[in-house]
Image (cartoon, rainbow, N blue to C red; front, side, top):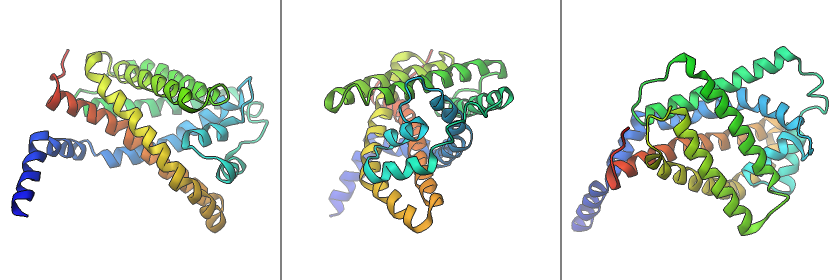
Length: 262
């Protein structure tokens, strides 16, 4: 038993897993994931609601986007739609000033993601005038989410999984490079993008088996608040995967590849 424990400890150290755990603790991974979820619900969701309401194809609005991302179907998807769907006149009641405010809040969310990536890669925070990068990233992310929802009615099964995985890897690969201002080479960022999409795939399966029935039971027990709590928990998981995937990518390069640099 002692020999087995010593072998496991040696394997852990040779793999550098202790370094990954330490880096996760240094960047406060769980804390950042919770901040990601809070900002996504408070600043990003209102912006996406307006964008989804302006969808010329009319594919169900923001609630449909969210249900698709969480892998919900049937009763759980209907409950989420009933509670989160905004009024039909959301576009007409949104003023120009309100739209600008939503865009600014959305950019703040992009800035939070950028700061997380910079912390993970040990880089200094970019100057304030690089805020345009956060705005462009937000536009690209909205376009990515939009195409994810649209492909649901065009493809299914293995074809959609392949298309979704490829587009996701490209987005997170480009997103890291763009938000970091090109300070980290493309090839060093690819493992993180792949890890992020693999993690999101696993989270989607977890959501289907755990969050989907939990939404139904919470809706019965706590009403709308219970559903929102489940959505917030899912967003924490998304934040953990987004930052954790990038962190895992850096760890892969440091311990199983080439060290990153310019």
